[in-house]
Length: 126
Image 1: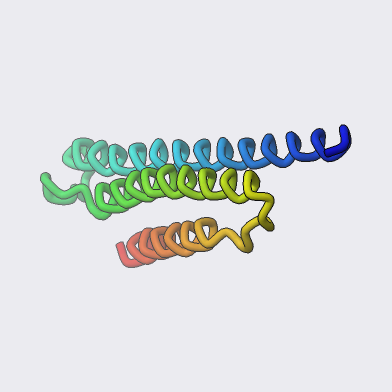
Image 2: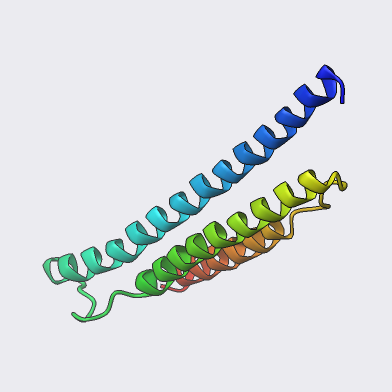
């Protein structure tokens, strides 16, 4: 192993770790945003009686469900990114080729798009 290949290997490991940390930031953002969405529905429920066209007390709309879905998506993202990171480091240790496309990213994109469409539909209908 030459000095150049050792330097390159460290860079690949560090890049994998940066990617993992990016996924963790993403999962924390999803959980935080989900919490805000869920709590906003509860806030609206409490403030609604003050409005002229008040909705019945006790309903928070779809906010709680959508917020909970986002929090769960954040948890799944954190777990899945950890598994992907461990697998990636093991592949690097064996000298194997890097993995193909990130199915994690594709699945999360589809899930978030579905939640967004659900929220948009709910906003249009109400």
